[in-house]
Amino acid sequence: MSWTEVVIEIAREHAESLSDALMESGALSVSVEDADEGTDAEVPLFGEPGMEPKEAAWEHSRVVALTDVDADQAAIVAEAAASIRLPAPAFTTRFVGDEDWVRLTQSQFAPIHIGKNIWVVPSWHEAPDPDALILELDPGLAFGTGSHPTTRLCMEWLEAHPMPGKTVLDYGCGSGILAMVARKMGAGDVAGVDIDPQAIESARDNAARNHCEIDFYLPDNFAVSEKAQHATGKFDTVVANILSSPLKLMAPMLSGRVAPGGYLILSGVLARQAEEVAAAYAPFIKLGVWAEQDGWVALHGQLGQDVPAARTA
Image (tube, rainbow, N blue to C red; front, side):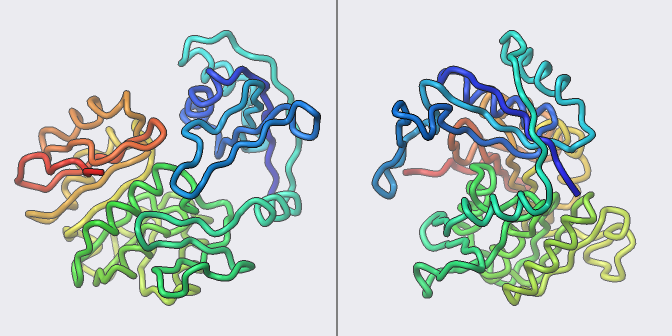
């Protein structure tokens, strides 16, 4: 399989908003680079642990969006720019093959520290803290390595709300990372669902590598699972890290999967979208913002209860 990267050079003040807009318009992933990298004008961004720069952008930024090779790159760029009220910027494209993808990810993916005690570690690295909750996870096509704020927020929520023996559903599971965190935090029966067969294959491989017993399904298979709990039952915790539009459409279904007194956690939601997503779920469950990171939020709620408190510093 192959992909096409869209490369856009843009000023710092628009880099983050354009990155988010490109994701909403169909990009598979987006990164921001220093457009002056390799020249005398290159400016490194770094900070002490816990004090990293708030904005990963440069005065002269380069936004790189990964798309399907057969996607309409011009339409994606135009839609993204229009959504943030910018003229459609000039862009170039470059082909990315399987071999390039592997080499790129291995060179860029280092261990990631999340929350208080979680480390996401690729197979070619040593775990920085062997006593921590370690997830061995090689990046691939399935979304979810812990590097994106939406994934981190969900992982931090699960770490802050351990539910030993409880049931958990990870809807839109991608790499399976959230399901694995729940399992390693002591959850009992854990299931993951995704519409992408490649994500399901990746999630199963990751769960086996991390010695996590988790059932992963495509939606149609989930509906007819031999496990009655999975096919028609409800879960103590339901987490869905997708995007705002599908989350709003799935409000009745996802809410209907939450057991009485259970929790629903949603991410993939920009801060400016939080109210409209919460409104879509209001007839079923009261949601509030638990935490925000880099313009993204995690919403949470407990079925039959008022909006739970937000995370405190």
